[in-house]
Image 1 (tube, rainbow, N blue to C red):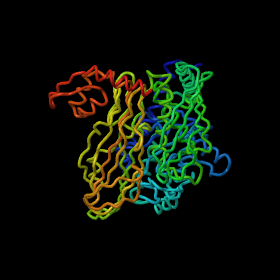
Image 2: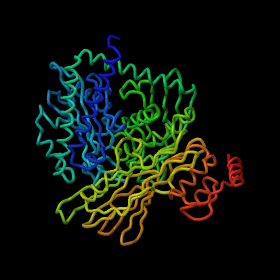
Image 3: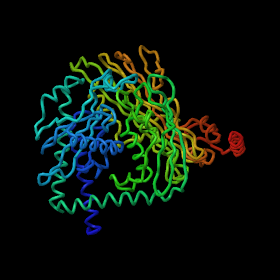
Length: 588
């Protein structure tokens, strides 16, 4: 290599900075709270030849790592085959077709060719979650869709911007097929502006170090990422490790879907085999190929976070067996739960398999749901329609070193729930409470983190609520004899009467009137290690803070409490713990 280590490191940081500035520009300029506040977006740089990932912003959603790489590669292939008009300087393509390397229809991708000396040097691309792209229900999360057309407008790759000028005719078609169309121009311009920022910053980097030097650095960084990932994989003994994870239902047929995973380590590589997983499903819990691959990538990224974020990190992985399963959706299978839910259960399956050979690196399962809650209606006071999209955090799994984080971001990304003050300002709603889901952390030597508990009331007008969530039937898996985390819970109160969806946390078109409320409790993380090995003083602390009740502490951890809060007297009953261990031994 002709590059010295310092120059290589500086260029690596420079590539990262370009993507980070695109992310920041996108969020700051966007109108929709789901982008501006929740940061449900990502920006990256991709190779001109094959769309391979060069760099991505650290604050972007990890699930978009594989999907934007796949989508950019597909766009390049379609251009080369003459299926899509060839690019010019200043063009920006728009696409949200999930079967062409996407997630669901609400994740809209822009791609811009980056030119140097008249040739495409690379592609700049980003994805933003639009709050609505049409379809049967506001927000696009149709829990009972049986075809992708019911989920919204599907866009093939087309030039929304031609040589820097937006095509008003294409934009008018988009506006005519989505709700709150007048608000989309702000997000569109923000998304395009982020790519322009990337173009300016990347040009400065190339001007400083030269095109040849930066190209050499990109190749070297990719090679080193592959080498580093393979070095980490040496920690895994040769062999096969299996796991299962479950989707509550597909939203149409009220039966679980199973992800069966077999991970085989051999010759410095990992093979992920999903061939025994459930067949394609009728409802929207299918995953497209790009998202399935990306879910494996992001899971490995969680396990080995030090490996640089580029295509080289994924070279040691072989993913197979998804054909003819619900993890390789083909048109017209519905996919609204693809990225937000199914991808997280794929990651959970990876964690459950690899915690066996890597118990000191892998955590118990996290909450594993984005808590997708969409509310659409008309605000009579403001005289306008709205679509509110709420995502929620949940508990992280415990690990070998410490308890899981409470109310953390979802497995698939950095997105966080928008502040309730912003939601109440933008929409006709009132949050009654916003707290931890007490008791939801899975029991363990290191317990899981706690989920979120919130209740929101419709203040005026009429609206329709829709949910696409998961882990309502099965809690996140514990690890190393740890207990499962608490399940997701949804209750809707209409005219004072409680209603629970038949599919537990999947439902659509629920009519709400002023005063009606929605109560959501998200899952806690799985516990790690035997709960009977948890230090008694930590159990006392959890009970004193109201995280568990005294009865739960006795049942889960074998600690008996006397007295009353806040000054509990706690005594460790060894006889009780010994009895519990004997019962466990007989059960196994």
